[in-house]
Length: 204
Image (cartoon, rainbow, N blue to C red; front, side, top):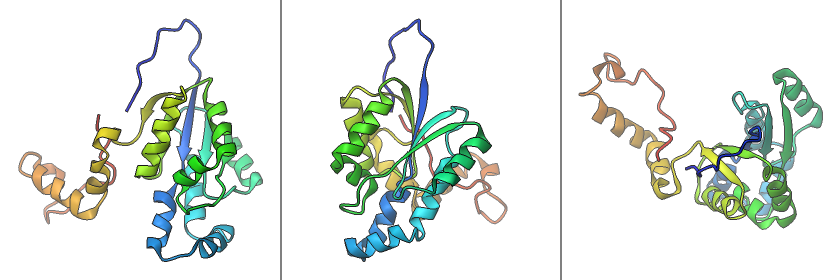
């Protein structure tokens, strides 16, 4: 998904918005945890929180980034990563309300307003951990507020169904099977893919 950009003689200011939503808190552990139990796991940085901190390293060649995480990471670690990569990193995390990071962000007016304010001066590239309905709601909200989104590393909102299909093992295998007659080199001799198929994007 992208927005058209008006010609502007001023230098382009770009920023990466990384959403470390770990597929919305690992879908709240398949709905098996109460919010209190989820809070304990978040505070202990179990699984999802530690995994989400990997997104501090994302952002490509753009040296200015905002990272939305389930938990505020260790500031010394953020400083170390920023220095290592030669980038500027600002971290935000929403207050825990539902256990879905993007939904919680939409419900956390203070953090959401801060995010919009931080994004407004820039052309924004969005990199999410996983695309969910709440992620698309967040993206739509930012666009409605006037944030210039020039690229989002996920299928467009109109084609978000491809996420659930292509990001699944059965969906990926189906696509590989359809491609094999046309691209024999895509699969090994035993029929297994030579390439790891995860996110087949962008779909626009």
